[in-house]
Length: 197
Image (cartoon, rainbow, N blue to C red; front, side, top):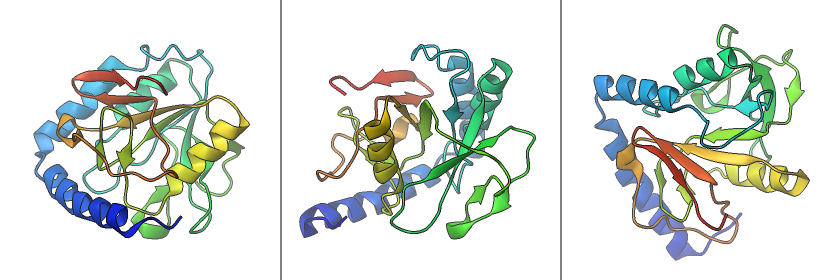
């Protein structure tokens, strides 16, 4: 996915700013935020009880969705985590439970083992560096979630929910035609529905 130079440069500048902004969140604020989104849950989406929810293993300073995922598992939702299969490929998803081990993967990420069965998620919890009211998100720039959402949406219905601290909201995320929008964003302040998506 090549981008116009101006969009790529704007994304890179925002990436640096938001990485620093997120790093300023204290350990106590981070824990409180995780518990807050777990308490909110996903009732605002209205997903069926047995819908497969894919989360993510928090990386560096990301808001940790583990308490939310544990609550979803307790409510009867099968859980999955994303797995990378090579640069330029969409993610695949493997079943996972909060007590299952993770293995080291590319880029310092942690993923389910290759023995875990592949599944298609109905709902996707998506990590991000920044988001805006239009549902555009800024990630680390590899395009994994954009390719994945495009593939899942072409195959059927999937709900994409960004998981973020409130301070990660910006007025405008630079974007190109390849960038997939979120359907919702869940922050400690509550859920934000993305209109028109």
